[in-house]
Image 1: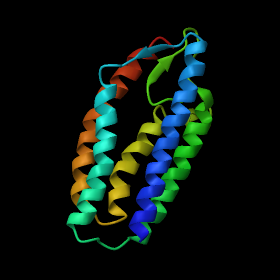
Image 2: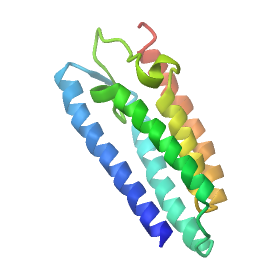
Image 3: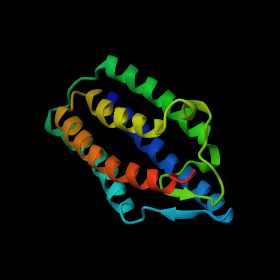
Image 4: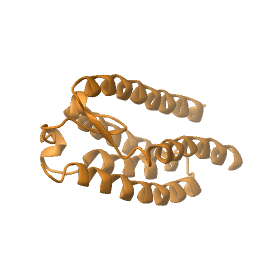
Length: 164
């Protein structure tokens, strides 16, 4: 029962992020934003979709392991950090990489202290979420895949903002 509630809320959270990203994308484009990194974006969507599928599949294959309350609390802490990071970006946040010419990177919230706080959060999320239900294979495999994806994505993003 805990798993069904957890995975449902997690999927709703991810879908709501896509909704917000789509709304922000319209605003960014209306401001003259240019998109970068289009070639890796389908792979990122596939990674996150397969992550959810892997969580469900491993949970079923492992005969419904129990919830780990410590990792659930850690996930809530990570989620709180995510909301802080995303709210600090406001309309500039997106799942795609956009830049409005002449606009500099946001330097408030966690962005005052860290260059890529949202990606730090994503690393934690990918590692912690499966551990809420002892899904070690998903945690290890997707942490490694996510590391590869983020190395590409952060490289693109750093080039986009290099002249700021």
